[in-house]
Every structure is written in structure tokens, then in C-alpha cells.
Image (cartoon, rainbow, N blue to C red; front, side, top):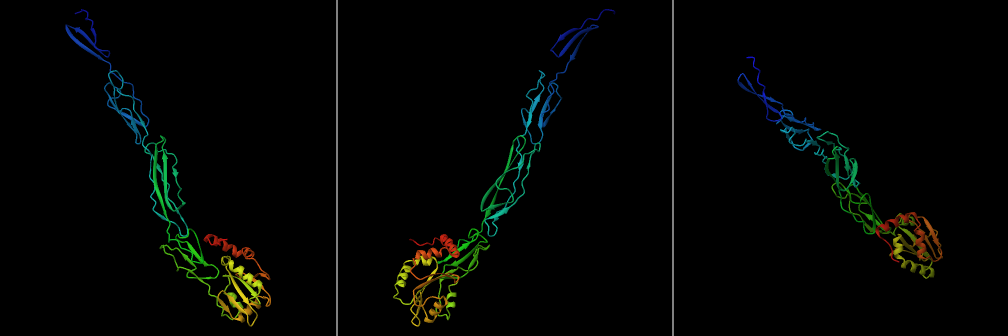
Length: 383
């Protein structure tokens, strides 16, 4: 008793653990002193987090995770090592998943009647992002909804981007079909004028004949929804002039809105002007036909007067009525040009060149319409 306690002997096992050795009352004790190892606190990744088994202490295992829509980059699991450092680099979360966008489904559409297009509408699709939900405006490639689409197969594409510039795309097609009945042809010696595209559903084709021909069959036909044309096929039959009528007015009525008349009158067939004029007209027959001109000859003096329209001979009394109605001189050569409405347009008392006659007729309003149709049909005279 009273003896001083022996000083403990300090032994270093490592930098963190110290071993004290001390004899107390002839007994030897070992005393350990510990200082726990810790790693730096991990940084919380944006749009994610981590879970640790034992915080940041030695040998603790931490696992990173990301919020929905984000992908983990780096090592998913790190461990606090003996050197107070984590076993791997800190992980981070990135948005790599493209936004989602779903396009509508549009059925095949039929063009509207008498048109080559159809109006097609649909709801503009909306994009959906699995990350932060922030998207750019939807970008459209193609015609917008509510447009009139022509015949064919049209590609429509919608694109949307998220903040990480990931792209989402969807595509669909708009198919437009035009119902068609098949092209019609103009009747021989006639014209055809069609609306719209000529043979599509709802199109109407109207038919007419050149002067001197009469339309038989349907004057107009419509392309129906069953892809068949309405009515019957039209034809143009040669005009049958009735020279057996009782009056000159009845004779002229047969040509109303159909033919122009050039009435050549002479007191005798031996008249030189008559013979020369008739020869020039015969050589210009194509120009006469192109301008719907019928030549009527009045030859002689009543009662030996003869009226001739082509191969048809009219009675002397009818020929005389025609002369009197149009006030044609009985005893001299003369010609009268009558238009399709029965109007006296020009009179000649001497020879007239066919080209001068044709130039005059080509100034008539109705003739200008005929010229347009003939140009479309390719009807012309070779010079």
C-alpha cells in the first residue's frame, strides 16, 4: 500500500486503435481505445437519391437510384473503404428516355362529290414525358388537321422534344381516294364539256353537236357513286332538212342555233359570178364546215326557180318565199349571210373571197365560243 501505480505502457496498433498495457496490483490489463472511421458525406444526385446501410461509416454500402424517367450514370453501389474514401465515383441521373407521343388512326377517305379533295380532321396528339413532364411544342410535318387533302397517300409526322433534347416521334398516313367512272369521249361530230376532273364522282359531262348535226341520247351525264354514268351514250346524227315544209319561215327554223346560212341567188345558172363563186366555195368546203355554214342555192326565176340544199331540192314556191322573205333580188346575182339566230348579217352583190367571209364570221360572239371548243378538240383545216 502506498506504492505508486505503475504508468501504463502505450502501444500503437494503428492510427485509429490504441492499446494500453498496465499492471494494476500485480494484474495486467489491456485497454483498447477506438476512433470510428468515416467517409465524406455523399452528394445527393439531382433527380435521384441513395440509400446506405450504415451512413458514411467504414464498410457502409450505399446504393444510388433515380426518379422515374431518368437513367443512372456511374457506379450504382459504392462502399466506404478503410482509407476514408468511397469505392467509386458519385453517380448521377440523366434523362435519356424519349417522350412518348401517340398518333391518331385515320381511315381511308373518299373525295367529296364533284371534287378531287376531302377535308380531313383529327385531334392533335399530345406528348408525355416520364421525367419532369416539360416538353416543347409538338412539331407537325405535313398538312395540318382540317386541310383539304388531294387524291393520294399523305404522310403525317408529329415530333416533340423534352428538356434533355430527347425526341419522340409518331407517324401515320392519310389516304384519299377519288371515285371514278372512267373517261367519256365526245361523240363524233360533237363536243363534250365536263366539270371537275371529267370522270370523278359527281362530275357532269354535257354534250353538243356541231352545226348540221342533231344530238340523240342524253345531253348530259353524271358520274354516280356506284361508278356508273347516268343516262345513255349520246350520238350526233346528220341534220335531216325537211324541204317539204309550207313556209320559208318553217324552213329557216330548222337551222336556228344549229347552222349559218349562205344563200346564193342567181337568175340563171349561166351567170358568171354565180359559177365563179360556187367554185370558190367548193374549194373552201372545210372552212364552211368548220364554221357551220350551209350553202343554199336559189337558181332561176319563178316558175322555173329551183332551190337546192346539198342534194335536196325544194319546191319552186318555197324557193320563191325564201327570196321574198329575205328580200333577195330576183334578176341579179346576190348573196345573203344569215347567222344561227336567223339574223341577216351581210349581203354581197359581187364575188367574195372565202377568207373574207370566214374572217367576218370569226368575229361573231357565238363563233368565238365555237373556236375555243374546236381548238380543244383539235378540229382545224389544213391550209
